[in-house]
Every structure is written in structure tokens, then in C-alpha cells.
Image (cartoon, rainbow, N blue to C red):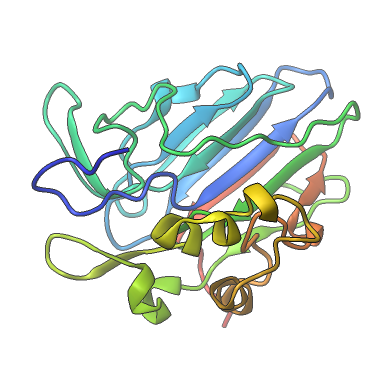
Amino acid sequence: MATPPKLLLLVNVILITAITARGGGGNGIQLIVVNNCGESVWPGLLGTAGHPTPQSGGFHLGPGEEAAFEVPAGWSGRVWPRRGCTFDSRGRGSCATGDCGGVLRCNGAAGVEMTLGTSASAMHFYDVSLVDGFNAPVSMAAVGGGVGCGTAACGADVNVCCPSALEVRDREGRVAGCRSACRAMGGDRYCCTGDYGSPSACRPTIFSHLFKAICPRAYSYAYDDATSLNRCRAKRYLITFCPPQPS
């Protein structure tokens, strides 16, 4: 995607929270999105593999605000933070990071495609990924307990130690995001494509090792350790941008 004029490079879908729900019955699954950051966040949403996109694909959350909505049982999709956004009354504009085609309501538009795992069981699968980069800390966990549930998270601020080659800066010159090596430099080696398109051929780079050291519970590259994938069965999930850090 070409960089729009008069804007810094837009890093689309820079950090992804994904949930795949199969079976389970009932009236669906509730997602609660909370902005614990000290600034506004514009969550972007996308239903994948033909699933509906909730909330028309995006909305605004001020500091301390939250939004709750339901997705149907069997839903597959992703949620990611957009930061440094400006939109007009028609919902047109841009974001410093996480942009989805210059619109408030992404409605299926996204800069990166992703295929999620599927299962015939009643379990849900979710993860936090830095495969395309990072722009905000995030966590996802079941609310009120559940069967076999864990927390997917990258709670640290990767931006503070982002290598200069991967930095994305906002209009004020601040580091607003940290791209993956694939997004920054391209090539089969970094993107796990072509001759490197298998787990045996594509190995973690020094950048992947850095991401993994900072956020061990998140995916750092395409063929990362599968233990970063969480399995759960619950009716409600909490997605928190800038989650509180343990004391």
C-alpha cells in the first residue's frame, strides 16, 4: 500500500488480538474493550474468513473508557489499537499507527491479511501477535474464569527500546510504533515466504528475539512457539490497551 502524501508511514494492523470461537452454542460471546492508556485509542476491528465485522470496524475510546459488544458463536476476527488518529465529521482521516485505509470505521478494510486456526471443538483460541509490529501494550483474558483459560499479552512498551531501523515516528517526532523486520525491510527471510516459507527454513531474527524477550507471551514471528496461542472456553473476554503492570 502506498504511503499517503503528507503523512508518516502508516503501519497497518500493527498489533493484533485474535479470537476464534467454534461451537459452544448460546447467544454469542461478549468482548469488552478497555482503554487504560493516557491518551485516546481508536480500536480497529475485522471479521476474518467471511465473519461479520462488529461495530462497523472501528470507534473512539478516550482514556479510561470502555465498550462492550457481542460477536456470534463461531466468530473469527481481530482487534487492534490505532493511535494518533484524526477524523472529520464524515469519518475520514488518518492514524499515525494502525490505520485502515483512512477511515474511522474500518468495515473490513485492513492492511494485513491473516488466517486464523480453526477447530471443531467448543474451545476458543486467541493470541497477541507482534508479527507485523507493535504500537501499544495489550492483553486479553477471560472474564469470570473459564475452562483452560490463560492471558495473552504484550504488556511492555516495546517502543522505548525499538531499534532505529524499525521505528515509526508520529507528527511530533516521537516513536509511535515499532515495525517488524518483515514490515520494515521485506524479503523472504524476514517475512517467512518463498524459500523461507516453512518452520524449518524460517528462523527467528535478532529482531524477533528482541520482541520475544520483551513480550514472551506474544508471537514474535510467523512460526513462533505455539505456546503463545491461548485456548479457553468462556462467555466474556476483556481486551485491555495499556494493561496495568504488576506491582
